[in-house]
Length: 380
Image 1 (cartoon, one colour):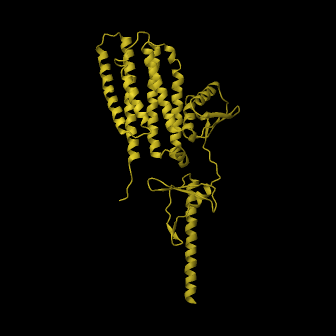
Image 2: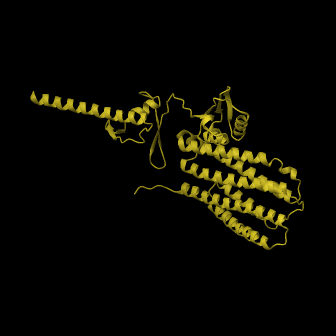
Image 3: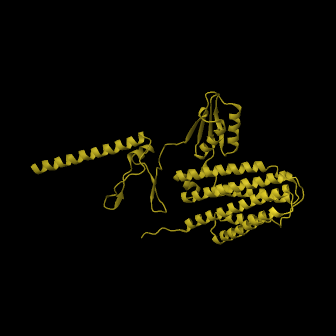
């Protein structure tokens, strides 16, 4: 009788201690949430149940946040690294990222920057308010922002507030298709510059500003998608790009955007040139465009396929052309050209040289991506 009484007391103490532990854990979680700092990870024990099944309990806070109840299903994914990812398959919650901007706290010249930042942050809704109402320059900035992005529209408007929403589903625009579109815009612009400098009509460059805006808009869209891939497992799956590779693609996007800036600069230089005398495409600096065109085509094609030799070949050609352009610029110092024409050639050569340098950077990043694709993890 005494033995049973002692066992009962021990069991009661154990249950009491377990309740105290759960209370302290919940209190700690609640404190972190109230401070805006949810715990990044928890240690849970692997338990054996039924003699053949291993289980790990889910944190109550995580279950509640995703609107799950008992018997709801979750999807467990085995990642290439060996880690497991749990996705709330049956959640009924719809999450939206909302950014609120108060124009009374933002300088007028910084409004566009804040709008772009909100877009890149992956916001579905941007709420803008102004106690004094919106001035003409504000509305001009709003139009500029909408024209420089994809999928953004004004959904509601009053004298003191404007709400913008993003209608574009990130999974509807494949990353590699957008990258290819950027490349085609830049490449076609360089071909048009060559045609004009070879004696063609300048009218074919009149839409260069529109093409520059389209390159920038695609760049913003791609950077937004890359950010969403890094943050969301579902978007990572729908676009079929790993987080590591998305990070590398983000660097490629920025490199292409810089090449786009220089292709636009070449257009402006060509349009502003006072002389109409045609230039030979077989002599420097124009001959470098042929090497750039063939090299960048190889690099873009290797975003999908895995021909490392083509990346090596492209980089080798670009390095040689880079050196030729540097020598050409040095020779301009002692040339017989008048100062305005020498300056024109120098600025043309400089932009082409920078485009070759950016293409080399792109090739190096593609090698990094390919190395990651080909790598394997082993257990020692």
